Amino acid sequence: MSVKILFAHEKIKSLDGAIAHLNDCGVWPFFDERSILFIQNFSSMLLKYPGINKYPDLVALAYWFRRSNLYKLNQSYHISNDFIRLGRGISLHIAPSNVDTIFVYSFFLSLLAGNSSFIRVSQNESPELNIIIKIFQDIYNSDESETAGRFVICTYPHENEATQLLSNNCELRLIWGGDETVQTITNIPLKPTALELKFPNRSSFSAIKLEAIEVMNDEDLAKLCARFYSDIQLFGQQACSSPLALYFVGPSSKKHHAERFWALFNKAAKSHNISSSEVMNRFVSAANLAITSQIKKSRSSFDSSNVVILDGQFSSKSSFREEHAGNGLLVQYYIDELFNLTECIETKDQTLSIFGFNHEEVESFLYSLTNRGIDRVVPIGQALDFGHIWDGVDLLDVMSRKIDISKI
Image (cartoon, helix red, strand yellow):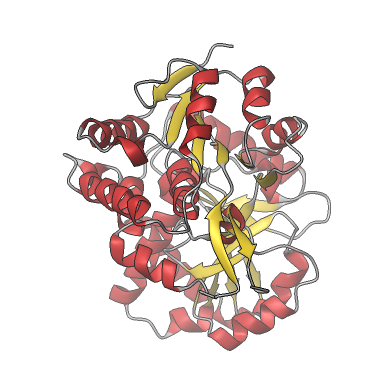
């Protein structure tokens, strides 16, 4: 096994040693103050890190775990004399390669739930990962080894031996990745007492009510366009919640308002720039979508500085989801009302980011769904925001265990 340990307690020198150490750490209560203080310290240090504003995903991570948000999160869980909450034991986190920060959300929630953690990250290096590990090391070096010793971060090739050893010793396994990765790891047995959470490929898109654009001034519409661009720019549309398509909703007489949206969107996306290989991937993706009758034409050239807008058409032959390359590629559709979107929803769909719809309209749309598609509805600009309820699962609730004492 070629396992490289990136962060761990100084006593840990091997995979077996890491498992033994994490077992010795035991479980902690739900939202233990030691966990809260550790996460608060990390958040504060991350916000003060030199040049942190170059990494908006890290800034978002730091803000999400500030103490006020942790307090609000803790208060959302019912406290009862009928049960107590404790951790499950060792949690194994298999992180994806396309979103550098997701393992921190996953791990911190597990820490708050009372667990120790073993985290396998991608072998692809990134500045974000290096910053995160450096801060963990700085906290550990400051003599905070109790909480900092409750987790191990490592990397290793896609091999079953290491994952099997870890799976045999964990009580909770979380798999973040593509469908193939999830299926491969799921085939590795767990302890009979262990639970598993799987987060495979998902797809997301946006919807805007044309009548809402009609009444907006240019300044407000430009702000909306900037928020929409931020949703597609970060992570190059590779995150599960990144919108791949945009549905304009309203009567055909209002279609011209979409042109005003795109004019201001192009200004918001003027700094867009991708590599030559990403340009080619987008072109191949668009060609495949055309072959399968998913699109009619492109509204823009495939230059590296352009966000490419494709005019979509509904087809039963295929889906834009499978062929979509991301990196600034959007398929636009027109539908008469939000309800019509129900016929387009697939079971793998995750996030719908919206503008112009009220709560009643959204509820009515969701109650009309006929499959398990759509797990989140958020305002445009918040598609990439993390939540403790993810893919329809309350992570903190599942990561912890309730011990029933109601009969005492």
